[in-house]
Amino acid sequence: MIKCHLARLMGERKMKVMDVARETGLNRNTVTLLYKEKAQRVDFETVEKLCDLFDCEVGELFEKQ
Image (cartoon, rainbow, N blue to C red; front, side, top):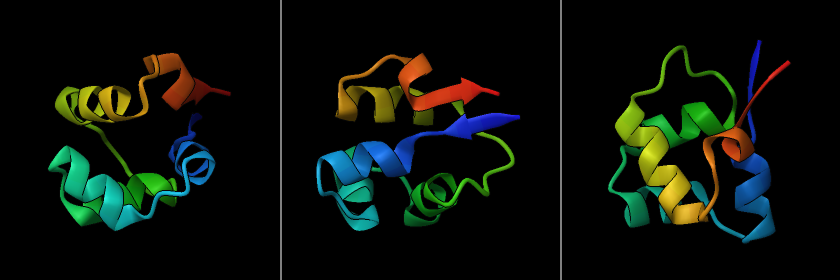
């Protein structure tokens, strides 16, 4: 199982879903699905935009459990 740490990263920076969507250009629904860990798949472009926004590596955003 893959765990997404987007909610934690957003909480640390006091960001809302709309803030992330606005700053990355990602669809609000895409961000919401990742935030709630309901996403079935993620594009590399999405991962790259989130890593750029949070200045993190892929391993800090996703974790295999």
